[in-house]
Length: 397
Ligand SMILES: Nc1nc2c(c(=O)[nH]1)N[C@H]1C(S)=C(S)[C@@H](COP(=O)(O)OP(=O)(O)OC[C@H]3O[C@@H](n4cnc5c(N)ncnc54)[C@H](O)[C@@H]3O)O[C@H]1N2
Ligand code: MOO
View 1 (cartoon, rainbow, N blue to C red):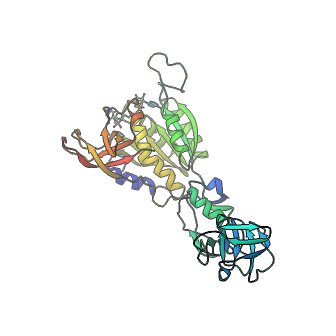
View 2 (tube, helix red, strand yellow; view 1 turned 90 degrees about the vertical axis):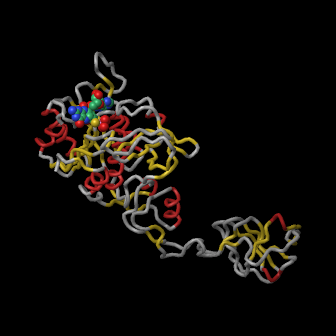
């Protein structure tokens, strides 16, 4: 188990298999935005509920064209005319208003001339029957399935659910994600850094990545490299979080205590090494009801593994049916370095539809990371490449 070095795909599958999606809650539409529907929803109403005008103008009987007509009333959105229109009659009508009984066509006001209650056609080509009418049920009919279980609640899906009569929808509870930064060398961002101390950049980086997705980030600060302190921090985090994410302390050094502390806290570990660069020391397991994901401390390794493991896991817990990031292909500009035995994720910037390699491959160097908007994926043992090729690329969040 924990000693074997897994491929990225195997490790992702095993991580997602560690927990089922969280329980269902029904929340107001705006709170559901960006999450995934936990059950299908049906239309509770027909849309449009009646034949409506799509334009400002006059509701007429097509058979009466080319007019003239006598105006006998008005239909506005939400306030229809409660009288039928007889031959030779017309009604003033506004966008979104129901067509009065007897009418079937809209004469738009730009093609109409009006004098008091007298109306005539002033255009060149008479409108066709049904002109500017949105017929009842043309968007959707009551009872049809509007969105399937697992559908992402995009802004468009939120609008559809609202129009379908839903003020709240069933989604999975948001995963609560505790972030623990481990290391005696760390200070909070902005604090003084005497000697070899350094700011914990991983915590705000992870919190801001989490904030883009369905999760709720709980920054639980810096934990010193003492096994008791780590064990205590794990126990506290397991009591409040669905997922505990750590950075640092997962490698093989004498001060890399995440794994022994977790074992002491009673965790079951699933895997500990992944054949990727950056990000080889990567650990996953369970502690009580919580999942534990140990990311490497190096800032770029933490960033890359967060994209490939943390964000997909958060989406899986929140009910995403296919939470893994989707690779795309595009021209990759040479030269590309030879790759050793681990799949490598190379920082790149997309310019005019092609991925250009950025200089740094150091898993601690943040300066170049800011310019990266993609990762080029290179398979183990790929030779050095001097020609441009079509490569596999992940777009960064
Ligand atoms: N003998 C070996 N040494 C190392 C191996 C190995 O296989 N054998 N793996 C290397 C790889 S790859 C990585 S990545 C690192 C990961 O080590 P850890 O996850 O145990 O991380 P630390 O040693 O605690 O820290 C690494 C590096 O990152 C800095 N750091 C830690 N936390 C933060 C934070 N919150 N914000 C910013 N920077 C952070 C830390 O100061 C170290 O410089 O291990 C290699 N070694
Ligand atoms: O994950 Mo380490 O940063 O591969 O270098």
